[in-house]
Length: 195
View 1: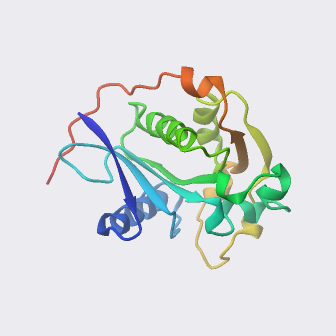
View 2: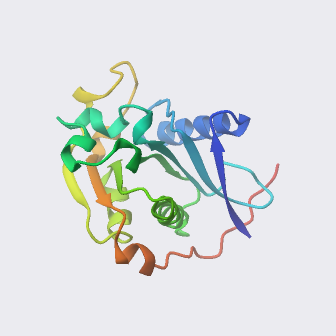
């Protein structure tokens, strides 16, 4: 049985998920980022607390400049004329179990949760692979342009080959019929070892 757990910065498991994402990016891109979202969502099962099958971070627009905003010329609240408190960013997206749809399921669940919590706009810096997943969940996605290494927040962060995977800044509104009509139940999830 799978379960979604949410970890805030004050919880010790948050640091564990931070390290798990860093290791995931290291193995896929040779990168060593230090993600610091406001919350981590983790798709796992009832026996294991994380990282489980997939995880992603969520950062709220009113906590400061978002990671994705470093790549664009204007802040999102200025572009879309909305309060920053209505903006959320999904980042540090990592799928640890391949081939079962866990990452898609978690992304869909986070989008639905943000919709229920009355957020209006979601932003991601998404690779081509993540954009393909996103387009299967959300009907209208706006591309705000390429995310380039020259515009990163911290130039000392090692991003390895991440920027070779065509990351782009994409946004979408949450009041969308397709959000509620999508069905992304994952295939049978394997039982994770507690060892």
